[in-house]
Amino acid sequence: MKQILCVMLLVFVLFPIRAGDITGRIVDRKGKPIKNILVKVKNTSNTTKSLKDGIFLLKSVSESDTLQISPSKNKKVYIPVKDNYAFDIILGKESLSLNRLSGEEFFDYLKTLPVRNNSNVLTREEIEESSANSLIDLLRGNIPGVQVTEIDNVPIAKIRGGSSMSLSVEPLYIVDNVEYNSLVNVNSSVNIKDIESVEVLKDASMYGLKGANGVIVIKTKIN
Image 1 (cartoon, rainbow, N blue to C red):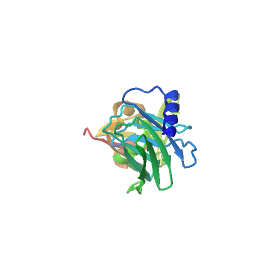
Image 2 (image 1 turned 120 degrees about the vertical axis):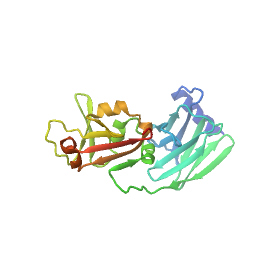
Image 3 (image 1 turned 90 degrees about the vertical axis):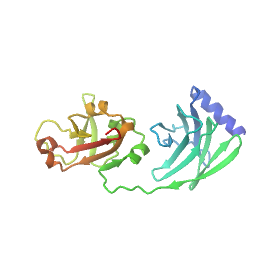
């Protein structure tokens, strides 16, 4: 009980808590804070990560929601929120323990093996697992061979292996059969919550000169 109250006090000092917010602290078995642990509301894009002191804050959460804690890419745990708004979480090798006001609970990790038939395709599940808040964030580091850089503060994407015959290095973007010529334009037109899959085509000769830099094909739930 004393430990939970201390965690709650520390969290309240660091974050202004509002109705619908939940917060907590993630540590290892020795009590050392763990940063960059993914915390999200299951089946949504409402995500956050623990800070260097192990503290996390997640907004707009209801009692009927379920939290997903991901200690690593192939381990995750589901925790019902219920009437809790402060979580004291201790990570172990095979499970985590959660100190509630009602007592300590243990949750075994669910181990998942990444299933990627094509390393150039991101599925909806993988998009949800990422902490990306936009298409630009999603393309950074999530698909091999795709680089996102900035020129004059404007983000652009580049597919390694492209054979551009023009000054532009950007690929062609196709969203539900609609073509876009820049990452900025497609990012402002597509909500990441609506994206079902992203596929990168390095060999896009079927698109002619327009596909010389490769093609990024995006399918949405709206289509």
